Image 1 (cartoon, one colour):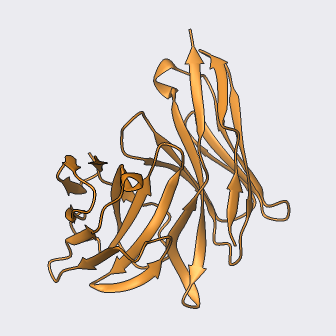
Image 2 (image 1 turned 120 degrees about the vertical axis):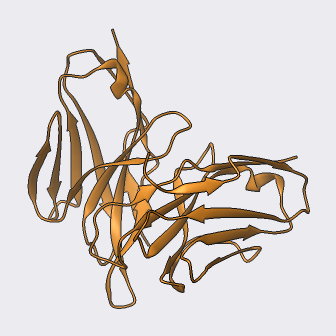
Length: 114
Length: 114
């Protein structure tokens, strides 16, 4: 158990819908990262937040957005869902903004878009 | 851009030694990490190399040659539980400083046979 929690564990929805994935980092960690893992692709970095502020962006679609709240939990919002958005979405956390070699991953949310 | 290459699959027998190679192309290199992921599970950190040379952690070792943009993960005394996907990941630089933004390779599926 990494100490990172993600809800829900599974999510099934229809195309065109909007969903929110939730992540609570390890106690004391200030950075949160979101990753997407599809069957035919590896782990794709989406976005990083540090202490409430966006710090780095990866291949995140405009239909996707995220935020980190004052209590440091984070939410990833996915809208106008398409079949290709079906994937495992992981959240990870680390103590600081940089110079930390290890990220701690949550169990993931499996999103299925029908 | 940034890219990492690693073999898609490797098969070995219990008790043997296996090496998983990773070559990378990136700007602002800040280190190479290795993560293990069991089927459907969360990635877990194995090792990190920031400087050239070998890092050893129990049965696992990792090597880095920055001049060759190359690294490898060495697994010794293989056990059935080592069957998993192994990802190399490059820590990259944004906003003028080090960050924990990770770019992952596509992963190597290791199958350990009895």
